[in-house]
Image (cartoon, rainbow over all chains, first blue to last red):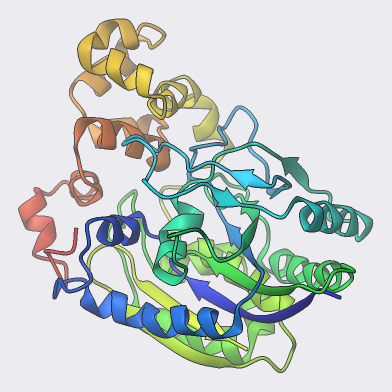
Length: 276
Length: 105
C-alpha cells in the first residue's frame, strides 16, 4: 500500500527560482535561503519518496478567469514547464503519476470533494520554484509529482477548515492506493506578503513565526480561522498559506516539525519546514 | 483589506486580464513588443492608455489581477519590487529602503 512518509511546507516565491537559475547559492543576499533548503534536500535524498504530492496555486498562467477552478487535480504522466512571460525555465518536464492521480480523484469525489480534473497542462512556479531547491532535475527528476491546484487568487477562496479536511481525505485516498509507494506531501505558499493595494509590501514576522508553531502544534486552531483572519494577519496574498493546511491535514496526527528556515529579504517571507 | 480581487473586479477586468494573460504566449509577446497597437486592439481606449503608460496602479485599480500584471512586467523587463513600489506611490529606491535585503531581487 502507498504510505505518507512526511510533509514539507515551503514558500513558492518566483524569485526563489530566479535565484536558483542564476546560481546565487553563494551570493550573501541569497545564501540564508539556500542553506535553509539543504536539510530539506537531504531529507528527500534519505527518504527517497516516489511521489511528491504538491498543493500549490497556478498564478493565472495555465488557468484563467474565464474558468477558474477551486480545487483541480492533475492526472497526467507528464507536465510541461509553463511559460510565465519569460519563456519556460530550462528544467525537464515534470514526471507525473497518472495511476495514483486517478485513484486519488475517484477517492476524493467519493468522499464528496468534487474536484476539477486537468491533464496535459503546463505547471508554473507555484510548484517548481521550491521543487528545484529540494530535488535535483539532472540527470532526471528522482521521482514523480501529483499536482493539486488550489484557488487562492480570486475570492471567494476555500475555507481553511475545508483545506484541512481535504488533507485528511487525501490521506485516506493515498493510503488506499494498492501499490507500495512512498509519498511526501508538499504544501506551498506564503508566508506573510501583500503585493497589492494600500498595504502592498506588508509583512509580519511575528505572525509568521506563530503560524510556523501552530502548523506544527495546533493545526486545528489554524483550520478554525477565517480567510479574513489569514488576510489580516499575513497580508492578502499571504492567505495562500491555507495550502499548508492541506499538507498538514494529510500527515499522521503525531507528525512533528523536524526542520524550519525563515528568511524575509524583500516582499515575501520565505519559509520552509519539514514534518515527519 | 481595502483591495480584494473578487468576482466583481474579475468581471470588470476580464478583457484587460485576458490581454495580459495572453502574454504567456511567445508570439503574443513578440507582437506586443513590435506592434503594440495591433496587440492591444481588443482593449478599449482607457485600457490601452494604461498599458501604454505601464501605469501599474491604474491597471490594478481598474481590475487587473496582480498575477496577470506580472506577465506584462516580465514582457517589459519590470521587476515585482518596481510594481509594488508603484502601488505604494513610491520610487523603487524609496521602496527598497524599507526592505531588509535590497539586493535580493
